[in-house]
Length: 194
Image 1 (spheres, rainbow, N blue to C red):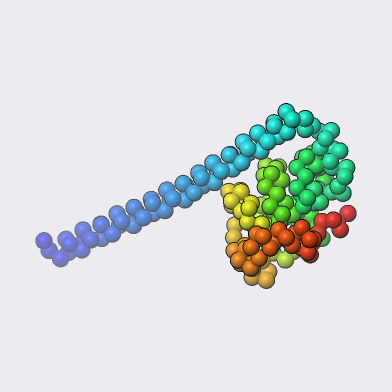
Image 2: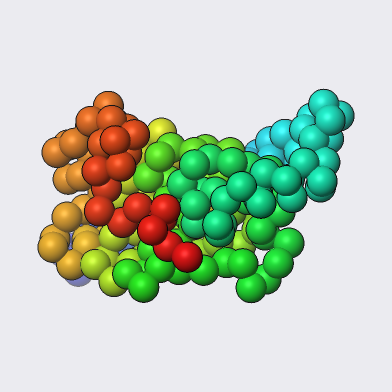
């Protein structure tokens, strides 16, 4: 074989390898998307199961309303993990608020690892990528809800101070963050929001 023929075959083989790599990358991307869609569908099914179970065990709109009356707003109920009250507040489109610092109900539920509340807020369309004025997202908080947030489309982003969710987890760890939350040491407590 001549050198020119070998070069042509080499170029063809390299082109085939490049196409195979591109196909592989596209397939991996599609698989990741499918896995995220599957997780979201499972979350939705679990949420619906929990709501059906709540209704079977005596949970009702009246009970949700009564629970909501004990709280000042959806931010507080999310912080406290009161799923029934959150369900009640979600019926009113004007109930969804943010603090003047930009924190949302999803921030508060995620901060305290309130998985069922996080799940309900996401099912109701909460913006998983919403960042407060300081750049922190719901992913920056309690690691017990990270998988659910990632499945809903949360992305690893740096806050204004450069902190990423992994930095926060490494610095505080779940136990320390939970203890700080219980003692209301978190600087943006929803109890002060009216």
